[in-house]
Length: 536
Image (tube, rainbow, N blue to C red; front, side):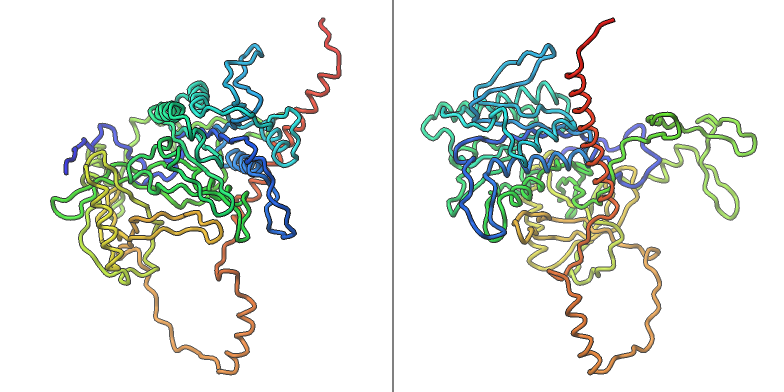
């Protein structure tokens, strides 16, 4: 097992914050191009049924509604991310428009319905008209009778990403199709498509497949898409299985597709990368940390000043002022001190760095305990998911997998000393294994299988709880009468899962303002078209 020792110390450390910034992992811009196949089978409506839970949408309609749902979500949660919709297999062809209004270079049977850009109000309205209202005035959902070249589709996506999102840190192509073998009898076409897919992968573009199945016939990924989808190493991909979207068991195709796409709409962004994980003396691997569960809050990108004649974006400035003379204090005049015994003890910047130096970032297992030794109340912070990385230590995946399986088998946890970055305070944590957990309705996994860093409290963090006095127990008759009341209060699945009351009003206001802005612009454009143009 080989490893590399990269210098963990930097010349300029961030002294202001010793905690891991949980919002920094979301600053990376993301661009998603949703490619939907338009074919006879994708346009075929489901059989009629009198059931209220039966499917009403064709696969194309379900995919477009899912795209509309995803676009609305990204406008609210990720207002600076890009999204586009590419229809392939259509009779018509359309690519990007040039500045002079002429159509750009075309790709046969590829229709760029929504260009890759930050979604505007017009894009949302246009997509809603096609998806929910079913108004297809331009006849873009007319399938072609010719064979669609998948290499052409991938090359078209390549050009879109290159011209629109060249510098984005995360670029992904989502493919929605029910055809598992588009070039079953053409080996040259399959090879050309594999080459184009490799070009996308070399550019850092990830291809995600969302297959649609009907009936009991499975989607055979090995027929074509096995050579198209490139997964990174096991630590990054976590799950190499491609989950199909289908209806049945009270689950509509639309809900199944939304669940599968929602599970991958957020790009994998590491909270910390390539931290040594010391399992035993002389045995190290490298891992990355991921913030799997995070509370959703309003995406506040700027502050608005409303006291003037019209709203303006406020630009914040920070100025330090002396308390006694109210003069501006320069940065070099500021000194940091700690108060001990009523007096201030001053430290130089070098001394502060020395005090904060607890060693290089590492996760070191000190020993093992039974899982039942970790009580549920010992959680002081949310857990961080860790997964292996082969960049520094070759063989990290095998060692990580062996440790995970052994901890699960023996029902034990590891006790570790953790410093996840060079300027952070050390913590004691439990290394807890977990199995994959999936949604009961759609089967979509929402918690991965692997190891978690579970922060443990120090003695000062534990409150002193006084033992309760003598308990007052009710009579058997009163307990029997109360059982009827309790049974009426039980919730489905015995769980309380309320909606986020903070984010729902914000989302509703954002949607309303977007659609209102779209209607105002449409009305203004209509008035401009009706009035004759004059020139003074």
